[in-house]
Length: 324
Image 1 (tube, rainbow, N blue to C red):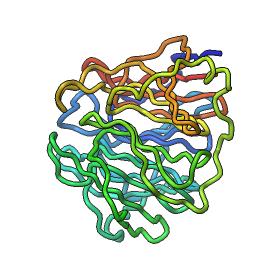
Image 2 (cartoon, rainbow, N blue to C red; image 1 turned 90 degrees about the vertical axis):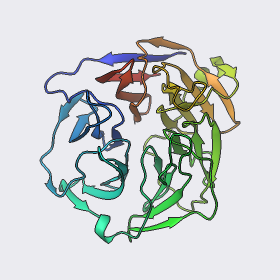
Image 3 (cartoon, one colour; image 1 turned 60 degrees about the horizontal axis):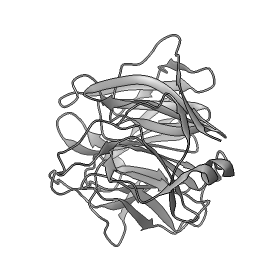
């Protein structure tokens, strides 16, 4: 059995091309906010879009309240009908702004004035741990390209209180962070990021993780037929999707000899089996785009969506769906 990647033809309105945006999936919808368009390094986008993953159509819902505004290199998570956007680069500075969107009423709330203090973050990574906790890891200080922040912060969405984990992690930026409760509720899995770092486990000890939206993993044939490999080379601005115990790592910039040596996006796919720690390269067919700065999410029992990103200095707004 192989993994098939297909480019989807979108009818109707299409959002502008972008990279370094934030996205999340919930209840059949894939949400996208901000990112960088053509003016990658000096201007951020501030628009909000919704992809209906059944009909494969884009829309811009009418929202009320104070939204997050232009942002890139930020994070987005959804917990039980509420969407959270945190941090990022505004086009002028790194920020610690926190906004929530009620997906039932489409009303934004600026939570920044009422939350507890937390460092500014950009090019960080986040993941949902339970029905009220978001874990944020990485680039939480004013680091340079030679040194990135190593914060480990928790947000309690009930109280808007931030707390810092009593320890430290390897400095990273552009990495991925995945909580895989079907394997362990005691840690989250970190991979990649600038400075060529590979893997790490962040202790979190979650007592009541959320039930998975999709409960199946890749078919055993996919894992059995995959080629076992060593830990992949360090990379940044890739995507990571949990498929019930197996994390699919796609694309990204492969690290060069220096932290500024970012290469073109790649179309490599690696599977990390959390049950035994093995890395696999599965059999692949179809149109696998070279991409970095994109986002991805599981949208069905046997499908993953890949959106946007960049390659060779060009930004994209295309949709690819991986099926098995």
